Length: 224
Length: 237
Image 1 (cartoon, chains in turn purple, yellow):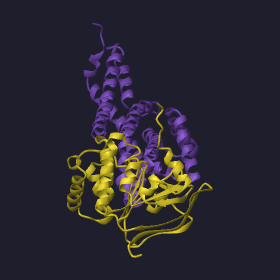
Image 2: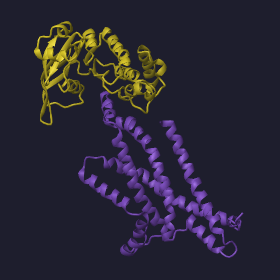
Image 3: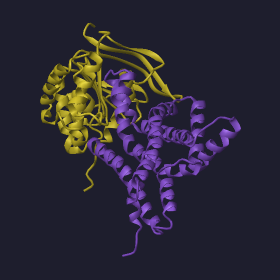
Image 4: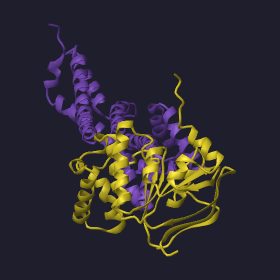
């Protein structure tokens, strides 16, 4: 059996360091998600408004964020704005800003899509029963919107978690960066460490995303 | 007349420059069942929707004798709330609009469901029901608000033929109880059985107003005759 370089994981505190790296990645994505959900909800509702200026504004925002590779966004915020605007930004904060901008845009579009997919007759039959506009939103439209959004937003959340692997490019020490450090440090003693360490990184990402997907799957099943 | 519950005067409505309702005059008496028939696009659905307040109008007036009178409406596509169980579909409006306590609303809902033979479906979701069952729930959901007048807009048009009967039977039961109803339908046999009065609409106008017996056997107007012929077929052998 070839040497898979798994032994490195058990040397010193290597495994613990990987977990710390993972928690850094999780921290960035979870803070960004915590910002994206409420703000995205608001943006989504505003995107369905009849105001042309608001509509165009949000459309441009959404498309810009979508077209731009996340790495370019990270570079713009971390290297670009810090120099131009002269403010200080550490890699972690820059990452949270970029991931929030992305999350708000995508979440907003998900909310918008779910809202417009509610058939018009749901509003009409609510009105016919005498429900007010607010009651219609609260008891009829929002519960249905949330149910439609859950699978899509879980997809977004797992995408955000996976994309945190890019933040090492602006100097944030997350799981992939830690992995590289471990491999570098053990280059002589375990030349095959890359396989074992990256395999563990894969497993860690898998566990994190799998847990989230499973919760979503359970909710979906209960509500379908 | 004192027993008029709904009065429509000179009602005009246009949409995109087309006149949909062109001067409708109608008095509906307490307990009366009026069936409205006519070719598609004649304005019959719009008339019901305008009475319910789902559409605006430009000229004329719609008034109920009792200003607090409720108007209930059931639509063609069984428009239940898909995320709520049957029972919760029914009690939502009594609880939120009238402030009825949940237990009281539930008790009443179960009683109504029992009457349409769906008590055992109280805890089902709409997706678990057949079209006919959904439509009966929709009728109960409207009835529980205790409406003075019920409007039915082609409620069997989207149903499979074998499910039409169970819905029409519920409506016949309501007619027997003396509910005031305005019904838009293409079920001519049913119209004949349930109607006190038949209105034939064409081009946004009431072209003919007649008793069901007269209307379906010898209509007064040429246009009604032509419309009714659509439902007749000559044997080909």
